[in-house]
Length: 436
Ligand code: PHE
Image (cartoon, rainbow, N blue to C red):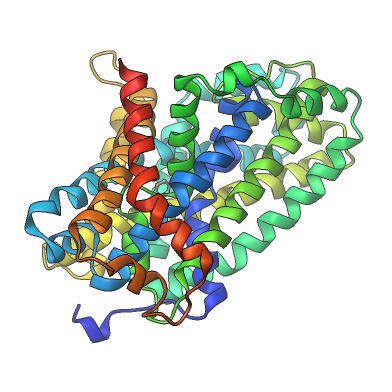
């Protein structure tokens, strides 16, 4: 695609919704609640909040700057600036591949739940929700739904940036927000809800500041903000030149935080009200939320609406890492956009099958999740910060994020200071501390 023909996202709000669409997904709705449940509730929330502010936002800005400046896919962008740093782009592509290996499968779980809600099966069955979940996991349906999810993603990505990605995000994100608020209000009236708030909002500082917890929180921040693997580089390559990236990154982060907290406020009261364990793990959302709906009038309807929205939120995220791979394959191997999307789709199906069936007894779910969120993304973000602040010409970041001085303010100075020293050093320190 030649530079001037390259697509771009429309207005300011659209840019925020598209980037927030990538950010908000299973990370906030599914991963955050179960990890917070395991690592001390509000204590985790606090460290997560700090991670978003200190490492997430600065690193997101670094990616925005590189993407908008070069207007290329992740690999092309780093290579255009320096051949020696193109490996950072490849690390992003690798990360997108690993995420593709498991994210679609989990996103597919909500397809199953949408169908079983809509048909009434979920609430008419005599089996408890935990057993229904286990029965589902023991069948072939997770793989089938995972593949359907990949095909839905392909459909939108292959339609292009404006018609596909932008349109989808603009409708789906606001809907998600509204339904979450309705659910948070509803669950407040369930018996036992107080115990959930007590759990989620009580602070255990000893747990919160363990290196392991901090690493998990940093990993969650990167995963949830889609930062550290070239996704925001790719998306920013479709930004217009006058986009105020500082306010975009703040808005996206705030929205992601808000949805994570809302998810916690919905799920923990429900967990306690249903007498379940907050440390349940990855199945948390899928076995607890039906408990909320069961006590409401028209459970199947509410449940179907909710899982539909989880699907939509996940879809705006799968689109974004599919796009990282599509832009890469299309631009680097000189394929058409459709061709790139098709190759990406084939690889995603193959990887999901490997994860589903397993190979050599390896648990690919945990492996892919750990390697991406707790290793590749933090390290990718760290090197991206070092790259823009220490390798690029002096003043590059300031020029980019202020649009050549047009939107300068005090926050910019603070962000640049964090980017130069605090963000990379903090990631490095925690990373080393956690591994030694
Ligand atoms: N941020 C997305 C989520 O929370 C996941 C994601 C990670 C998307 C990395 C793109 C890139 O669901």
